[in-house]
Each structure stands twice: as structure tokens, then as C-alpha cells.
Length: 95
Image 1 (cartoon, rainbow, N blue to C red):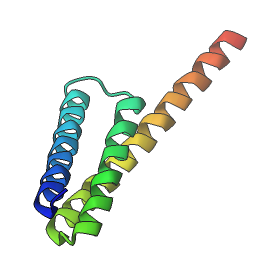
Image 2: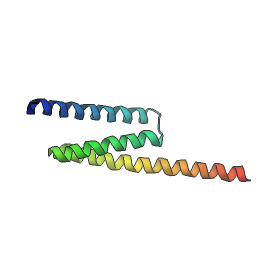
Image 3: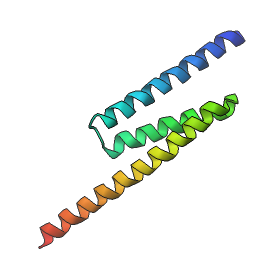
Image 4: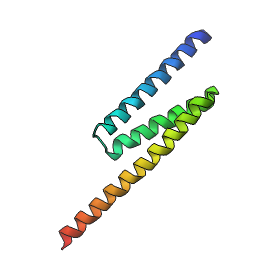
């Protein structure tokens, strides 16, 4: 396989992952604000960060790192909120 063909495949994978991540963010913002989607966004962004590091793309790396930090915080807030709701529901059931 030629180098240009391999580069083309990697570029296509990158574009697909970027598009999937954007789609997940759009779904999340559009009302599907669940921890599972947020976690998927974080996983996709981790892949994009890794790729940007390996490809020597400092602008992309900085952007993906900022997004990753934001979505990690959002995921933690969602999980904490979900845990608090479950705890509250359990307390109501016991009384």
C-alpha cells in the first residue's frame, strides 16, 4: 500500500471521528443530555486528542484538549446529578 493511500485512509478516519463527535454534541445539546452520550463524546475526543498529538497538529490538539476538558466536566456533573437523584429517590422510598 502506498504512503499516500495510507495518509488518505487516516485522514478519512479522522474526518469520520470528527463528524461523529459533532453529531453526538448536537444530539446532546438538542435534548439527549444523558451521561452515556457525554461519555461517548469524551471517548471520541480522547481519540482525536491522541491523533492530533501523533500527527503534530498543535492547533487541533489545543482545540480538542479544551473540548475534552469541558466534556469531562459535563460528564462528571451529569453523573453526580444522576447519583443525587437516585439517592433522593431511595430516601423517599424508605420513608
